[in-house]
Amino acid sequence: MPTAIEIFKHLPKKNCGECKNPTCLAFAMQLANNKAKLEDCPYVSDAGKAALSASSAPPIRLVKIGSNSRAFEVGDETELYRHEKKFFHPTRYCVEVDDSMSDADIESTIISYNKMKFERVGQIMSLDMIGVRYVSNDPARFAKAVSVASGSTEMPLLVFCHDPAAMKDAVKPIAARRPLVHGADSNNFAEMSAVAKELALPLVVYEDKGLNELADLVAKVKASGVEDIVLDFDPANLKDLLERSTLVRRLSVKRTFRGLGYPILVQAQGDDALQYGLIATMKYGSIVSFDKLKPEHALPLFVLRQNIFTDPQVPIQVKPDLYPVNNPDEKAPIMFTTNFSLTYFTVLADAEKSKIPVWLQVVDTEGLSVLTAYAAGKLTADGVNKALEKSGAKTKSKTGTIIVPGMVARMAAKLQETTGLKAIVGPKESSGLPKFLKGL
Ligand code: SF4
Image (tube, rainbow, N blue to C red):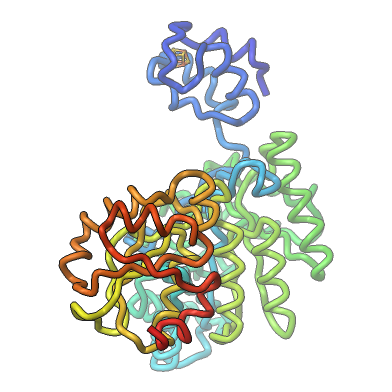
């Protein structure tokens, strides 16, 4: 890994600041610490790019899987802990079928997985991948099963087969969909790497003996010309999964050890599958492949993933607008809240519970909750009035009243003066809304 000074020698030394660093030296220091990307400077010469390619490569390679609108990327992480910056690419969940199943069973199983979706704080949470396993020992049957699976979903495929010839027959017709191929092991890596290279597919490198052996195998696969690699170290138990995943991430991002700088795939099978999935989501698993997954197990996994992979510095927001609740008309009052997603959905749910029609005005507070936004000067009478005028709320509700969240009762007088509406102080907690609205 070059030092900042070595990197600096290859930079243009214009000190123009376009890379969001005041000087080229400051940029070199960021690059040396994996805090910036070489592409952030538009003036690096081709010779400079070639010289710096190693130092500017992400500590964990970015691997793209799939080719359509459901394609995704894994890897390219730079942190051990989310609060240091953020995690960039969420864990992806795969559920498997195998070629011992009939075509009809494969199709109906995959269709049920296509439909497994949940909505939380305005985001749709769903599965990402379908896995197909070779268990029949019949290459023709396997190729048919992969074809049926491919025709049953838009999700990318993960194809498990350790016979290179059978793998090639199965994935060649669907190579344009860029499935992930599992995989290369110590016995078949030369032939399997040749298949992945010829069809330009990402390849899982599988080794259960230890990380040293895995790194050796990765080096051989890489030397054969395959760059898009995913690691599978087949942990013996949950403790092993936690320890090896942590070691791989630490070596990659803290020591810039590129021999293991690839996304991790975890196979979550059998009775402990959910526990494997939870640990892999928390600690550095890029893809988790389940033998099966019930909706009641998928939901907590999806929620955990959503919580871990949101940017801690950017609150989840909803669009500032006027939202009708319980079919309001002009006799319905206006209430308002902020565009922090969690606040909005909590208020919405409690207002809906009341069955009383209201107009809910969402005010742009840059994603802050009510009290925080008020304290930060982001929720003001003037801001609320501007939001009401933009959305036309005062023409949609003719009651001449506006309900103020109880937490910010102190803005009622100013709000009344600014909006010309009678301000009524609502409950401090949104859980009090049903009783409050019914009593209006
Ligand atoms: Fe230097 Fe390039 Fe940054 Fe400009 S954009 S300051 S030339 S590193």
